[in-house]
Image (cartoon, rainbow, N blue to C red; front, side, top):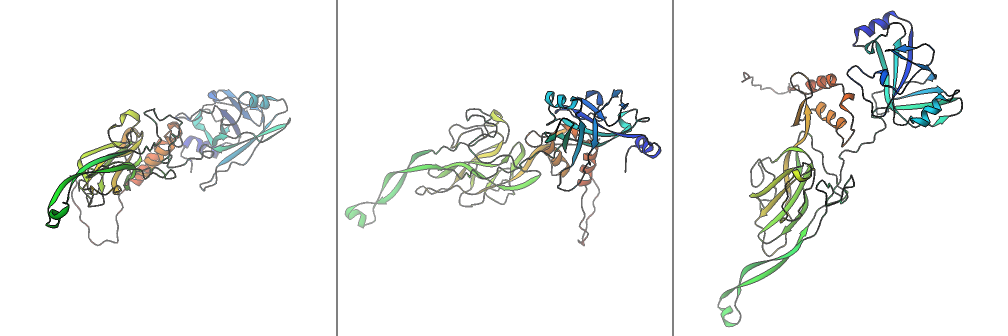
Length: 415
C-alpha cells in the first residue's frame, strides 16, 4: 500500500516510467522530502533525455540488477552495471571512489514526476568497493544503509585498554587499571597472660598488626552490561580491600549514562535508593556511599584516598563500605546488587516530536532509535529515521496489556 495519493495516481494512470540511479556523498542524509538530485555527485539513467527535479541524468546505466528487499536476516542489496566505454565511470571511480558512497535507485514518470513527492525510492544503500569491471562496464553493488555494519552490543569489556585509544591519564579514559594496594591495620586483642597468672584466667591487652591487600574480581572477557528500561544487576567489583572492621569497595554495574542506582529494598541496608549487599553479615554503610551514574570523565566524582581511585568514565558505579568485617580475617567483598533505571534516551512528546531527552525508557521503539543514532553503535544521522513511524511504534508499545485470564479487576477513576 502506497501512502502517497499523488504518486498512487501516477502509478495508476501513466506508462512512461524510468528507473534512475543517483550517487551521493558518503555523509549525505535524506531531508524531510528525501534525497534531492541537486545534491548528487552523479545522476545516471539507461536512456537519453531523462530530467527530474530540474536535473539532467546521463545515459550510462547498462542494466539495473534485482533490488533485494527483505524482512529476514538477509541483507537488502541492489546492483547497477554502468557503461564504461567512454571511461566516464572509471574516471568517477578514480576521483570519488564508489566505496562508501550512497546509492539511490528511484522510479519516476518522465512526464508527471515534477516534484520529489511524485517519485518512488526503490532502494537506498551504501556502495561496496566495485569487484568486477573492465574497459566496457563496471558493476557496483550496494547494501542497505545498515547492512555493512557489524555492531557489537554491549560495546565494551572490563579491559585495561581504552576502546578509543585514550591514555590512562585522560579523565575520559574508559579502560580499567587494577592496581593492587597493600598496607596494614592495627587492632587490640585480649590474650591470656603467661605463667601462673594465665592458669587463673588472667588476660592482658596486646596490639596486633594485620597486613591487608586489595582484590579485583575483574574478568577481561566480561562485557560491561547495557541496561535499557529497568533491571536488577549484580555488580562487578573493580577493586576492594579489607582494612579491619570494614571493607572498601568500588563496584561497577553497567554502561552509562543511566538514570539511577537503587535496590528492591530486600537487602541490607534496606534503602531502596541505594545499591545493597546480599550478605546480611556485611551490610553496606548507608553514610559512606557515593554513586556515579556513568557520566563522561570529570563529570564523575573521584576519591583519591579510596581503594582503586579513578573517574571510570561512562561506567555507572558506586564507592561503598561494607561493615562488620572480622578484624583477624581478610574477607572478600560481598555480592552487591542494584536495580538500575537504565540508559538515558530520547522519547517523543505528546505531539510525536522526538525532543524529550535525558530520560530512561523501557519502550522498544525509543531504545531501537537510540541504538541506531548513538555514535557508540550504528551512528546514523537522525535524518535517516522516520520519526512518524517510530512514534506510531512507540504508541503501540506503550499500550497496557490486560491479562484476561485473571478473574478479578479493579477499575478506578483517573486522578
